[in-house]
Length: 259
Image 1 (cartoon, rainbow, N blue to C red):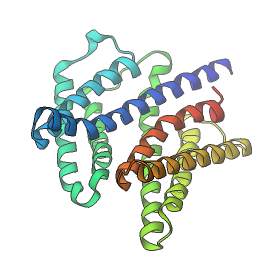
Image 2: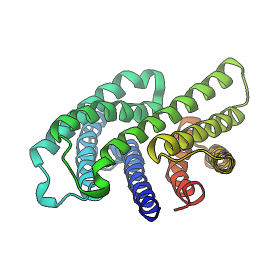
Image 3: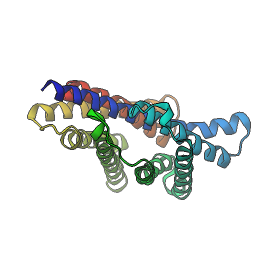
């Protein structure tokens, strides 16, 4: 039992660091091209391509060193450069074709599309090697956790879009309800498929409370950013989601997993 608890604690930390790396990537990719354009006069397209290339390179090194704890000497510069070029190409073309329809949402969606494409490529470039102890199942666990994240965003976007655009429900209520359902789904999915833990009535109650708190805070952030700081709705929504997705795993580890 002690080993099992230790493994859950270790795995939850790895998932959090992976999650933090992803959302840091999203923030940097959304903000840095504009800063480069305004500060140095670099054309927006060139700035975006440069960021799309450099950030995935840094993230690949981050994942290797921090997530998988690989020694620096094991890093392959040619493979990382090739991976960065593929990521940049995938994100650039996805963002180019999606931006007319999705606006600011094109960047997060493009990153997710690139993650799927690059995930397949990484499996070819770095075949799974036998690692001792907990590392043996880590790649599989990280891949499974992504499906829960994809489900969260599918629920968030679909419920918000349908209730707000089709049934004309107030956006704040639509967004909060979608966030609530999405968090419950993701937490339940992770408990069952990532952590292999049973869902008890106590855990369900804790999930609902955590999801409710996250939904309320996310909606409040949107209100404040729009009402007090005059941000547009899309920017406020994306910012609130990113911030809460950095906080949510901490609550999950503390109150649901108890590690």
